Image 1: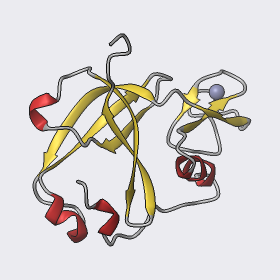
Image 2 (image 1 turned 90 degrees about the vertical axis):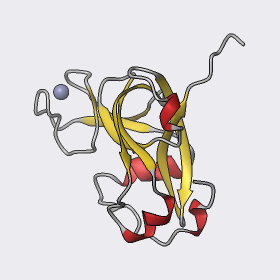
Image 3 (image 1 turned 180 degrees about the vertical axis):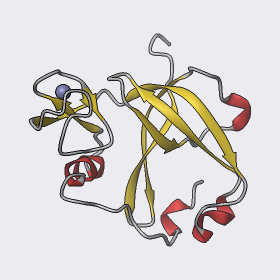
Length: 141
Ligand SMILES: [Zn+2]
């Protein structure tokens, strides 16, 4: 996955609602919306809270930490530009704040463990910085 900067891919689809998310990724930060009413954290970006339907949501910096809940080894890429990087790992990370997201995991398959701690690891794919997750190193080493 080291040559990802040379990959030619369409970028993420950025809408007015999701733009703050992608702007923060460019700065190396994971941001999530938090509902001002029920305080739940929300991902993917939306106009209304999916928990209480309130429309007052505030972008806040998230921890960038989560746990790996499931994953797949991709052998046949969904976009032709990814094919030369197969096999690679895609999985679902449950963020410490609660929401889950689908992400790339530049981790060897043999090192993947259910519920392992992972942390934000931004990779440039072509010109687009994307939020991948990597194994979280022990903090007491
Ligand atoms: Zn809410």
